[in-house]
Amino acid sequence: MNNSLNTPIQLARSPRGEVILYADLDLWYSFRFGALQRYLTADEFHRLHESAMNVDLNTLPDAARTMLTPPSAGESPVITLFGRLTQRDLLELKELLGRAALLVTALNRIWNDLN
Image (cartoon, rainbow, N blue to C red):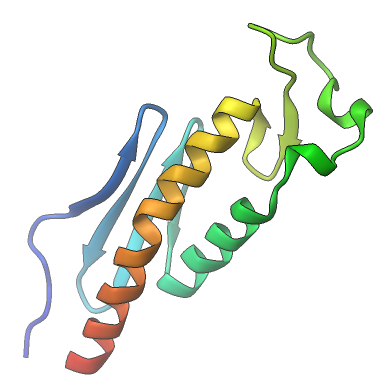
């Protein structure tokens, strides 16, 4: 049985990022947010999703919130795995990954059942 896709499918998009599904012999996902781009398996995507969801700006020390650059538009950057993020950036990242997470889970389960 040939379960490959000829065309990639965009699962989620935001102004700064996107999650795209590719399928040839396995499912894999292209994740892009700002300058960061990675190709991930479903398990890696879910670890990335959990990591982003666990970042809480309210629990960071004040020094971490105001590190390196002065605030722009009233927001302080935070240095994370994803680079410098303002609170708005972090919310956008969480929304992007959240929208794609359910689709990644469902598609991975279907793919595993078929293969």
